[in-house]
Amino acid sequence: MREYKVVVLGPGGVGKSALTVQFCHSKFVEKYDPTIEDFYRKEIEVDGEPAYLEILDTAGTEQFASMRDLYIKNGRGFLVVFSLTSWQSFLDARTVREQILRVKGTENVPICLVGNKCDASIQRQVTPDDALALAQAWTCPYVETSAKLAINVNDTFAEIVREINTRMKTRKTKTKNKKKHRSFFRRYCCCCCSSS
Image (cartoon, rainbow, N blue to C red; front, side, top):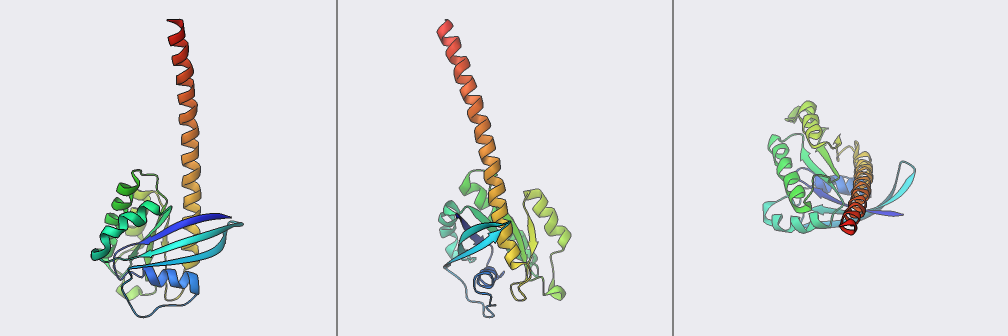
C-alpha cells in the first residue's frame, strides 16, 4: 500500500484542523484553538486503490512560520486552505504556495486549493470564479468544502492523492526522457572522442 504525506497549510482560522478532524474522525470541532502541529493517519481508497495517508495539520499563525519550511520539505502533497468568508485568507494562500515552491525548488508540486466554509454563503467574500481562476493559474484542482457539514471533505483528500499520483507520473516521464537524452548524448560524445 502506498503512503502519502499530506501537509495541510493556510492562514490561521480558515478551518484546517476542522477539515482534518472531520476527515479522520467524522466530527466537527466547533471551538477554534490555534494549532501548533497535529499528526493524523488514515487509510482510504482512491480510484479502487488503497492509500495510506499521513496528514500533518500545521499552524497558520505567523509565530510558527519558521517551522513551515520543515513541514514542506517532508511533505509530498499540499492542501492550501483558505476561507471563503475571508478575502485576506484567499490572498494569503498565494504566499503559502510561493513558500511551497521555494522550499521544494520546483513548480511540479502536488497542490490542491481548498476553499473552506462553503456553508456560510451569506458571509462569502470569495466567488467561485475568483477561486477557479487562481486554481487554473496554479494548474491544480480546486475544491469547495464545509468541515461543519462534511461537504466534499473526503473528496478533497482523495483529490490530493490523485494529484500526487499524476505529478509523480509526469516527473517519471520527464526523468526517463532526460535519461534517454543523456545516454544518447553520452554515446554520441564517446563516438566523437574515440574517433579523434
